[in-house]
Amino acid sequence: MSDQEKLTNELLVFFKAMADANRLRILGLLAQENLTVEQLSEMLKLRPSTVSHHLSKLSEVGLVSAKSYSYYNIYQLENNELEAMAKRLLSEGTLPALASDIDLDAYDQKVVSDYSLPGGQLKTIPSQRKKMEAISRYIARAFQPGDRYTEREVNEILENYHHDTATLRRELIGAGLLDRSSGGREYWRVVKQS
Image (cartoon, rainbow, N blue to C red; front, side, top):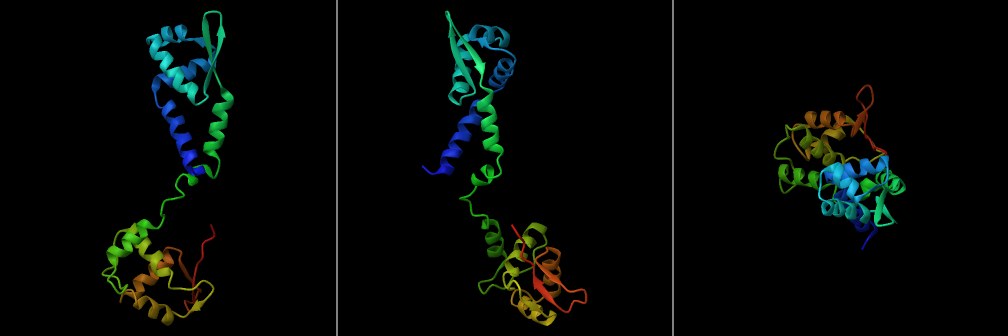
């Protein structure tokens, strides 16, 4: 099992344990004081077996623990585990890692496929903003980073995609994928830093 799969499973188990109003109430009560099943049962108006079930789910993910005292188990909140999970979940790389195996370009590829003829020419220029952004990202790849282009050269490249080169040029500039000098004599591809 990969690290990503382990993390995903850990988060699923954790959030399943938290995804119940009564479990959240139990955590809230245990945050105030340590309690027995019987005490929690009375406070929450639930059967002791139901409370025990909820406590076992919370215990599985390390949020509560029990200590034996005479005939009773006294349950306490494990703040350290809650804080550790929050840190792991909120760390910069955790959430993006959950989607690391997903093709981020799938939407763009579908839009390009839907709007392109077999030779790469556009059937039409999309009117929807999100689709136009996908088409713009696709067309921008025709421009080499670091190279400078005249307006005529830009139009020759854009003509390969659609006869309305002025609209495509404006869209590429508006999307921040191409930039131009103040006089409009030179154009270049903008490479965004990640």
